[in-house]
Image 1 (cartoon, rainbow, N blue to C red):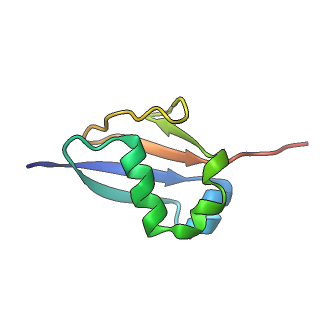
Image 2 (cartoon, one colour):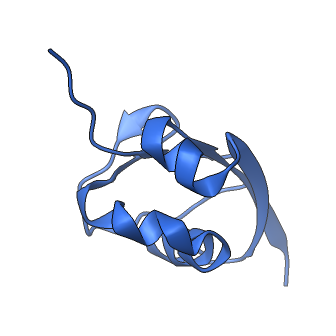
Length: 86
């Protein structure tokens, strides 16, 4: 069984709630974005307050909500909370 390293980036409110801007995660084979998100929520439970409106990106491309995508070694996943502007 091999592991794969994935970098997780946190932005805006997500960074505030997690208390970090990025982490490195080692995942087992066949891990996907949904499993990664569950891992992150277990590690940083305060993120649960924004998860319903959060978007994920994989290697700088937005993902469709609720559609797990397999992860590869070296992937970068960003957790992007809703943003507002004026």
